[in-house]
Image (cartoon, rainbow, N blue to C red; front, side, top):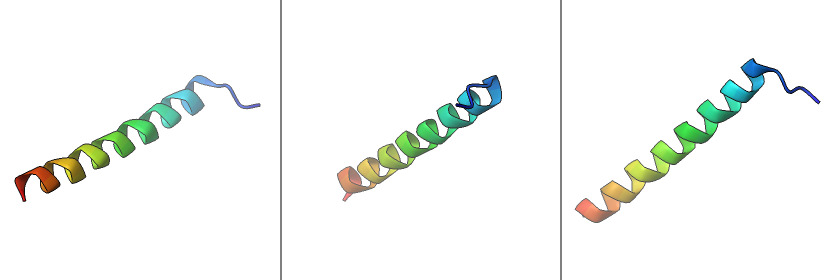
Length: 32
């Protein structure tokens, strides 16, 4: 198992980007 700090940071960044994309999609739906 790769449990290095870099791996954790990368995973957190991916999750954060995914949440941001969902928020943007949600905002676009609300504006329509």
